[in-house]
Length: 604
Image 1 (cartoon, rainbow, N blue to C red):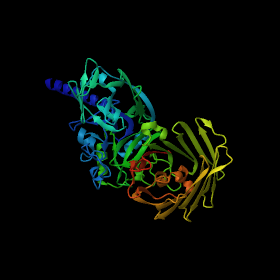
Image 2 (image 1 turned 90 degrees about the vertical axis):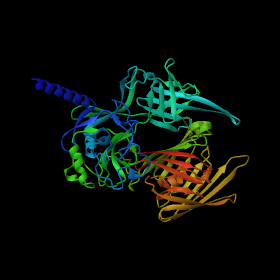
Image 3 (image 1 turned 120 degrees about the vertical axis):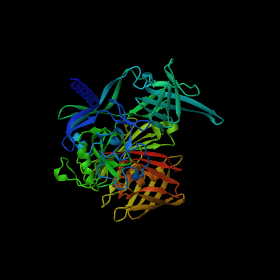
C-alpha cells in the first residue's frame, strides 16, 4: 500500500511538471518530421547574463542569435563562427550547433525548415495588439513603475558655445534599449537589477523609490516620457492554426527614431520585421540558412546569411527525426516532401522581392538622408524616390519628393505614355499646371533627350543629350541649363564615361569655365542585384547639375555590374548594409560634396 501511495505521488508530481512545461508550449496541429506531435514554445528564448538561457514569458522579447553559435555571444561576419566552414545541412537537435538544445537541454531544439514551412502553410497571420497584465513588482523584484521610456536631457557649456543632447532609456521586461540624441543605439540587451540599482553595459542607474524615478551617479534625474500602466498593449504577429484553432504569438519590440526635445514628446516607430531561425541550411548557398520571417507586407520562409542575428522559438517533439537528417548534410528528398520547391531549392512561399526579366530585385523606394542638413532643417534636406512597374517588371513611373528651399514640399512625377513621358509637379499640395518636362527615346529604347521648361511652360531652360555605346552602356551626358540672375546665363556640363568588364570605371567632367576633371571609380566584389544604377545614384561628387534620379534608372542604359567601393583616391567611400541578400542601406562617407545614407525598400 505504501509503495502504491509513493507511486501515485510520483505520478502526480510528474504530471504536474509535464503540465507546467506544456503551459509554455502549444500544439499548432502541424507534425514533426517523424510524424510526432510538435509543440512550439509560446515565448522567445532569452540568453541570461550568466550564460544560461530561459524561455521568455508570453509576449516577452527574446535575445538574438547567430545561426550555429551555441554560446550566443559571437558577433561579426566570419561564417566559420556560425556553424563552421563545412556546416551540416541540419543542426536541429545537435547540441554542438543548436543553441536551444545546448542551453535548454533535451527535448528542446530549433525547428527544421520543413516544420516552419508546415507552420506557415497551415496558419493564418495578422498583426495585432494584445493586453499584458503586470503586477506591482515582477518576478525579479523590479518595480513595475520602472518599465517604460526614460529621457535625460543635458546641456554642455564650452568656449565654443552650448550644446544640448538627450539620452533615451527604454525598459521593457528583461530588456533595455539605450539611444543617444545622434540616433545611435548605445546598448540593447539584458540588465542586472539588485536592491534599487540597475546595471547594463557601462551604465549604472539608481532607483529613487519615493519619487518613483531614476538617476545617474551624479544625481541627475531622468524624466519618464512614456508610462507603463498595469495593463499594457504588446504589438506582434498572431498565428491561428487552420487545423486546431490554437494560437501562437510573436511580439515585435519597439525601435525608436527621433524626439522633439522642445515638448519632450518621443516619436516611436514599431519595427514590424522580425526573423526566427530554423536549423536548416540553404543548400544552394552555404552562406545562408533558412528562417521564418514576419514583415509588414506578409510572412514566409527566407534564406538569410548565417551571421545574421535572429530570435529563436524552440520546439519539442520529433527530435529523433531531426537528428537523422544530419547523415545526409547536402541532400533534400523532394519526392517525399510536403514542401514545394522552386529551382533554387527553397520553398515557393519564400518572401523575396519581385524581380524583372533580368532577375534583378525591383526597388520600391530610396530615401536619401542628408547628414549635412539634419541638424539645421531636419528631414527637409532629404530626398525620396519612388518607383512603379508594370506586370512584367518594367519601370513605368518615377516620383521624386523634396523640399524647395528647405520649406515647401515638392513632388515631381515622371510617367510613361506611348514611349514619351508625362511630367506632373506639385508644390505644397498644389499642382503647378504650367510646369513641363519631356523625354524622347532612341532606337535602343533609352532616353536620348531631356527637355525641362520654365514655369510658364513655353521656354526650354534645360536640355540634356544622352548617348550610348552599341551594347547599351551610357557613353555621355551633355546638360545645358539656363539660370535666371541679373542677366540670363547658361551652365554647360559634359560627362563622358569609360566602361570595363561591365562597370563604369571612369568619368571625365568638363564645363564652360574650362574646369576639367577625371574621376576614377573602383568597384568591390559585391554585385548590384537591384534594378537601379546605384553607381549613378551615389556618384554625384563634383557634378551636381548632372545629378538626376532618372539617370539612375533603366531608362538610361545598362547599370554597372558591381557596387562602388570608392572613387577619386578614396575621398568618396561607401558602406553597404544587407539584410540577408537584400541591400537595405548605403552609407556615404568622407565626401566633400555630400554625406549621409540611402535607405532602400523593395517591391513584394
